Length: 151
Length: 151
Length: 151
Length: 151
Image (cartoon, rainbow over all chains, first blue to last red; front, side, top):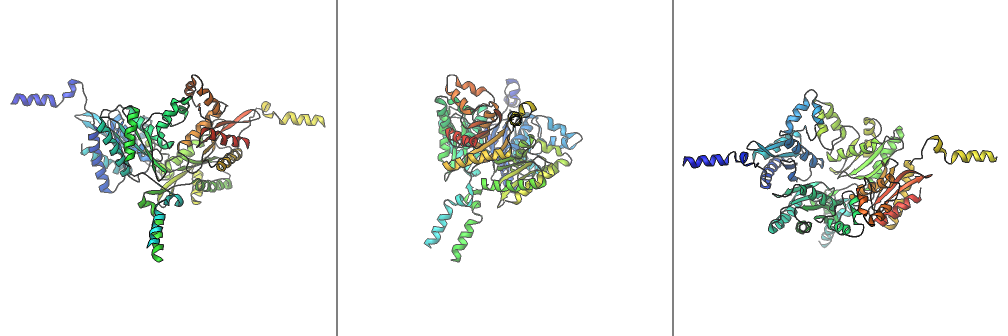
């Protein structure tokens, strides 16, 4: 009994580390995350674009709610790309850009310094990101977090 | 009574033509089209990216099924952009490119000469497009058409 | 009689909102806006580029007065694109960029933080934008506003 | 008397060659050319985009008639750029692309192999170009020529 449990733990927990695989985000994952984010947006009466990227920064899914400004299509993707490319929330860059010399962040390719982009991790490994745009950056961030919470 | 009905019909049918408005594609439309295209793809066992653009060539929605080549994310969008920018199927350009001097199409910005992009019309006005990529171009075209048929 | 009139008013006023159509900018609109902007520019002795975009950010018309710096051709279009993509004056971004951490605006795709780009609305719906470049940004803004006032 | 005439001819004809100036296209020129092209288009019932570029390939003016496909905004500019960059009609490239190995033209930056772009010369010097897009390439070419004829 104990031995079986041990084997289970041993194989299920950090399996990909020695089998040379990595976890990834499926379309089903992306849709679950998007649905949760969209539900939050609707509950608040906020219209946004929700983009989900894979670990290479490429779109898995995107959804633009009616009436959202066109610019948010690219902004949502840019925020998500920044989040997955730098493995951190775009809020981290936003805060850094408010400090002395913060504009240097703007010289980093793909860095976005506006809240609303969050990396998605599985077992400590980056698998993708979510980017939200359409309302205020703080509100975009709340929606993005609602998506992450459903993962 | 009859007169009122007549007035209603008169205003509801081609209203946008003389009041300077135009029809547009909603997210609900895009989702219905995408679902039909995805259902066809699944029924055939084909994995694809499905992109829906508005009349300005901007994403309303995108969905990438698991396992699709990364390149199809941009290809699906490029096909859709070609379809809405030139108000015609990318199959038309594909056929033209098979003719004498057909490579000249390749010198037109945004033109894509591979089947799988279709314009979406409402009351004779272009409202957007669908782009599909992932399998053969003929198969991509079948999936795109299945989407259009549901609109 | 009264009832029929009511029906007519009911359908004509906010018709596009529930019939899924939206207003758009015609070439005649663009020319009227451009003429007014150009008249203001000439009255002040300012030479500029005046660009009018549709709601997807694509040119309807552009006019470059003699002697304007070449760079203004793209700047006018970029200001206009920012205005229509974000549904706000580029002056809003200019002001934001003067505040703490304002450089983060520069990391948003298509955002321009220099006055001279204004969105064009009809019945509360965005239909396009005007972008002006050639003199100081405050002067560019005055010309753009003169264009909007003629719409 | 004769001597004065000779001096006049001598100075007025190829003046810019030894005074190191070059002729250029003014906005008034661009507008006259555009008006003639637009008049021809309207007479034929063709809706097009008409772009006029300067000798550096930068827009002086652009006009998009109502209902023209969005793609023509960039295509008209691309044709005009090809015409001024290579000092020849895009029809020359179109014909070349119909010959053996014609697709090599597509590898030249800015070359467009579709009729509708014409260079504009003054006293044998290139001063700009016109690009037309919206109908068939042969029809685009007719409209472009009507513009040139008015210069």
